[in-house]
Image 1 (cartoon, rainbow, N blue to C red):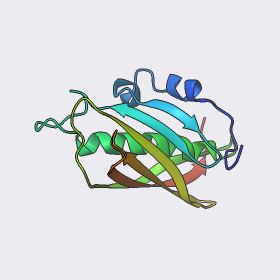
Image 2: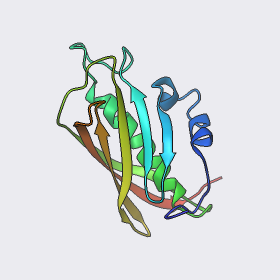
Image 3: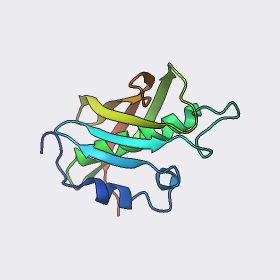
Length: 142
């Protein structure tokens, strides 16, 4: 179970995507490890900018999606994580037709805030983007 306080599996996580942006983007959960979540996303016309490469905003959607889910999985049922800040550094382009793989791990698991880092890699293994998400831990409402 590692750092996780709630149990889930990739299929359950993906089911939550239905009808929302992660589902529309085709984000798939590949693995939930002891202290990480790994996901994949295709790069097609939904994700490309006019130059035919992965749009930076699509990378941020991928990183924030798995970071937010990871953050919530570390919390007891009466708490939830909400995003405070997300940033991304895009270091290499990804052409349409590829699939990127993202791995998200915690940098800080505090009582009131958490920081998660996601590395997004191209199909050839080269780093395409590194993103950091900060979440606030708050009382779950209704």
